[in-house]
Image 1 (cartoon, helix red, strand yellow):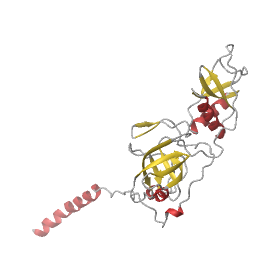
Image 2 (tube, rainbow, N blue to C red; image 1 turned 135 degrees about the vertical axis):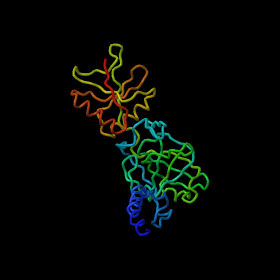
Image 3 (cartoon, helix red, strand yellow; image 1 turned 45 degrees about the horizontal axis):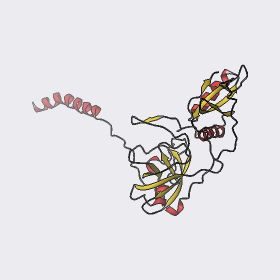
Image 4 (cartoon, rainbow, N blue to C red; image 1 turned 90 degrees about the vertical axis):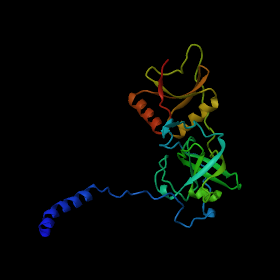
Length: 275
């Protein structure tokens, strides 16, 4: 009888084992924790970033953008930026991945992430606890914690002596790259009462990219557009605002191309200006 019961129950036993194996979830693959470099990197090995005039990054400058339900607005210019706050750092977990600007993240270089500075920007970061300094290239977005001002690469953190502590109070001061000051003089358009818009040919179309209460802001935007090879650029004093205009253009295809190029490079969407 026992042999009969065993033979009869064997199929049920096998079915139960098979069902259990099918219902078992596969093991989860967890990402490795963030940490320091596997390379024996020393603070003296990390050199300062060298500020240089560069066009705005093709990616990472769209404004506003949203992370974790919160909107962030990219500053129209890095000029004059100076702020104190808490710095943190990120390392091996992100090494080799693309930053917000599109550049690969190299944890051994002096770089950083910031929530609102234009990409790229350059800044001198000073550890307020020990006076150590490093010049970084800001090419990424973050850190998205309310109490954090800047996220440093592992290399930059080594230079400041915060690789072990994790965070520190710092001073962040933007450094203007050589050639960042405007070299082009932008001529104001005719704003006499007879014309509320710049003179243009019958078939020409102008695009407005921005408007500022002060001329300096308009000149900075005009310079960024030219550095990004978006031309021609001019500034027009209309209605107590300094307006940055592109054009004129004479074909729909050219207009659409310029609009798309400006958006891809992180500028606000240009809009057509009418008389």
